[in-house]
Image 1 (cartoon, helix red, strand yellow):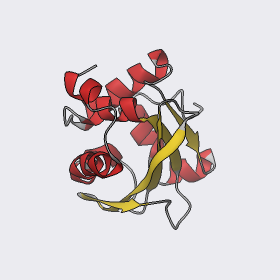
Image 2: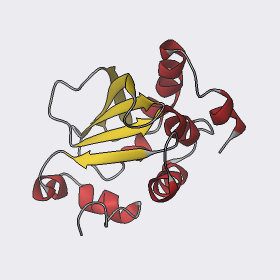
Image 3: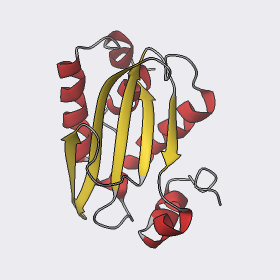
Length: 150
């Protein structure tokens, strides 16, 4: 874990939201291969996934090179709902990685995480609906085919 992620695990909600805003909307490669309109909803909890909700935000692909970050739950049905502990989220975004590094680290935390360093996800639409909007290609590119049920 990076020293920055470790030292900042108890950020104020404003500080945490600033880190989120500094990272997610500036990395459209995270939603590479997905159709415009793809939406992910994020739930950040502390100290564990069973802990209290720190922040909810959503990310929407509005152009191939542009993501929009919004506070709170998405008004439209999100494709995926992602759950992070604060510590796991900070570990993923603190070094400002590209998509390949982000997803490699995500997979590592998914396999090895526990307690304060954990994450989970929920497919919020049918697999066929997700395949039609690019998730098959996205899952192949970032090695998530097992998680997508294939």
